[in-house]
Image (tube, helix red, strand yellow):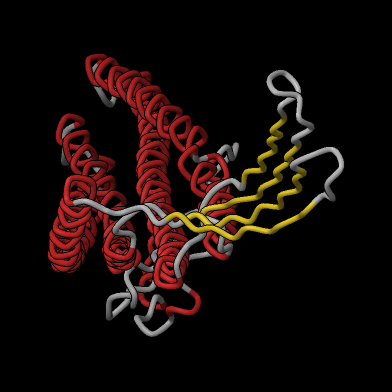
Length: 405
């Protein structure tokens, strides 16, 4: 009965067996990676994070320069033309700019580097999250399609049974009520197919919205990783944020006051019309004095940021370990459930075959046969869904381990 079922199950089980833990270099399928890439390209967060790379490059350029702000040019002229009219003339041209001190400049360069590293860690973490969404929706679509395949097969089988029943009704071997009952079961199976088609359309729409692909690849059970990916993207992002907070604190500690301003001016003056013109060059520096009122809020904010980032690292590490442990337990549970579902489906198929043989010999009634077939259909659906659940459990474990498709 349902020979193609056996072929499908054998192929699926072969894929499960070949998914060896050591095959991490071939994890998932190229189609899954393509789907993740497509979803990443459509992700608003992904686009925002990648465009921030230009912002990080600009931050590197600013950190490398010694100038702490915009330079300024001054021009002044003094004359007694409107007062004593003694011919006094004085022209002054100046150029000044705030300049970082050596410790301030190195601290700002370190902050620029850690900010860039934190951004790359955020991109990796966000891409892993997108991969998790693709995995979930891909296997949800696979589950819906498996239900549709089983519903259609069950409908075709009932239609064949109904034809046989109607022939026997016309021949007088069965009562008319048996024919009506068989036709009712066919109509119920058609309704189940329509419901399954609606679920497939819904799951496919969700997948298309995420990836932009019109159709999905056939999901295959992913090879299961033994150890956690190092560095784990989530932990790496949390640690990078902590390093950036520490670099920000160093900038605050190095910058106790506003940067000093260095300037140079050129003066050309004349006291009387008959006297020669004299010139001079002036060098100057202005050093702001930092106060506790200015620095204390900045230092407190930096320490608060570090404390928050430290707690985030600890929480992320604990969360990752818990997710990995839960995913391993769910995989083991899915494997046990799949084994039980396979055994149940095998027993129900054997039972149904015996009932069908007895029905053809007139030893069993139609109601008993339909009941047996309903149980067989339920067992087949359960087996298909457990295979999908096992594939999803593989994907979730790899997701928890931080393994990218």
